[in-house]
Length: 385
Ligand code: T4K
Image (cartoon, rainbow, N blue to C red; front, side, top):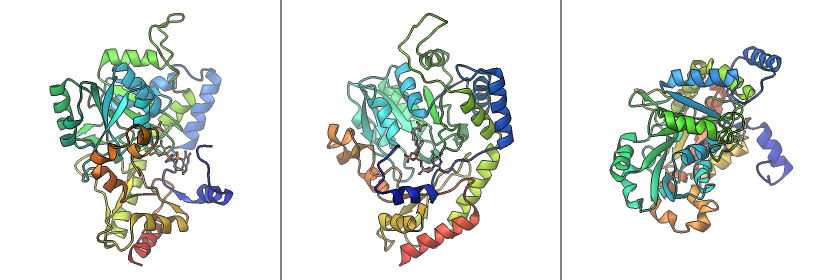
């Protein structure tokens, strides 16, 4: 079990509630057919045919040379940063899921937390240079909510200061930035295919890159460093994606446009439903870009709204709507970072402000317009009470 729940009734409530992150699921028959074929073939993991097909389809969709699928994005981040030879310190936003920071710290690389822009929720390039020290080897940007980072500014700094750039694109599958698909920026980018993500493989992730040598190195690293049957040439781990996970990914890939349409419908219904609630705003997605609309994110501006964010979340939870406060309180306020870097918050003013006002609402295939209307009603009621 991931967490210690306060009581069995809390656990029960979480089981039955309306959740953020209910999985999107494609055609079941297609999935079962693929699983039957896996069983018939008796080839369950280790570079199987479905894994190869999944990697090829993703590469074509993203217009990128290499997709190296892995067991999850956390391991993918670890393998990618190790393959890039990142060491010492890496600049990263604190406003992200804890896995981004942990993937570095796990390898004894210090995540140096950079503040974000309150407008984009992404790392603020104007605050990067002041954090560079002789130990800095790279910048790890995160495309939060699938909205692309300011890749141009980040990569300009990196080129000038001789740093490597990689991105955590866990939220950004099928999204674009400046008309270019996320996945094609920096040295490499990492996607998550966790159950709660836009494209899910139950569990899964991938590193995508146009760099041939890097791709080859990561393929070896995800399989213990084996080159051939008896020869290990790198320190490696078991980062492989199994056939059943690839089967789920391929099946959901076929439902991609359908899932985007449902997410967009819900997103627009939320925008309409919350349009006149004082102090509540729904974050924008640039209509000129490709967006997956996987996250419906609202901000509670307490100067305008009579209730604060936590009171609104409490009201939603009381109605069994399990809205989330991602990414509160920020990585720098979680262990081991709050002990290792007790003063990091001094430079993270916008991170702390944004983390204190964000609520992520339920969406995806499990949510219909009627449900959206109910969630909006609870928010309206709580915000104006
Ligand atoms: N980088 C970024 C920026 C990320 O956001 C993430 C993951 C990663 C890296 C690491 O990716 P992976 O290593 O996981 O591939 C959830 C997800 O578990 C996590 O993958 C995700 N980000 C994060 C934003 O959200 P938790 O701990 O908040 O929630 P969790 O996993 O308990 O699930 C949330 C809710 O979803 C549950 O309360 C109920 C619902 N749910 C979940 C699962 C697994 C379902 O309805 N069905 C399910 O099968 O992290």
